[in-house]
Length: 287
Image 1: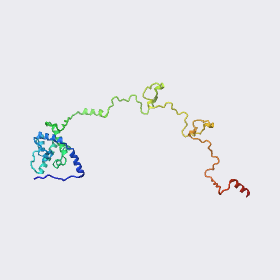
Image 2 (image 1 turned 180 degrees about the vertical axis):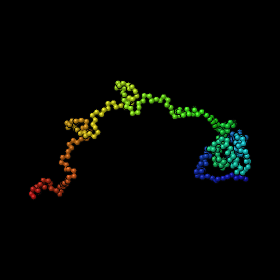
Image 3 (image 1 turned 90 degrees about the vertical axis):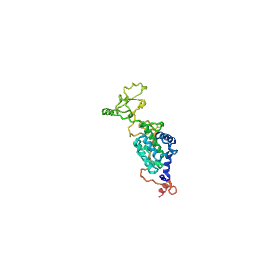
């Protein structure tokens, strides 16, 4: 009596990953694969699809039908290592048949029930490769791959194509620098409402690009020039534009008369302790 290999239950992250992979398994695809394998090999799989493939016998017969002689010896023994050997031979044979490594399952995915979704995907890819190679069945399963069409060009044609810009890089169709002004050239302003003549070239800027119409620096004072303050109600006439109006502040009635010089001593007067100025003068007179 044979016993299957057992790795025990999985927990944590491994269990979550295994459950997500199991959820991707498609029962409808399983029925389509069951019909396709029966049509190719003539073998009927049991109700448990993966259990019927686990010994590797039907898989080896399948690849031998698609590519005769792929697995010379098929083990019909009930021993586990014989079953595992059949699956290993099948995986090697489908790689030689044309499947990519990322499309193939590993032996433990089937034998230890690790990833049945990957096994299902490998069989679908195998059906597509078989259809591409001309092995057609009534069951329409798998995607036919496009045939490779390799083209060869002579060296002169390849060299000539290096000077042509493809449409993926853009196009210079209808592009021209005709009439453009050189970098840094002065550009004049043009306003059609002012009765000005239309510019002869593109060096004139229209009003949509802005204008300096009526702009002038006449009467402006130089940077740092002293500016006087005037008050219109005091009958002061500003001499020029350097005079500042009251909106900018004023020094009207401002005076430094009676102020002590900077740093001078200042006396403090208190009525409780100091005599009034008149009394102090009388005291000084008596003395």
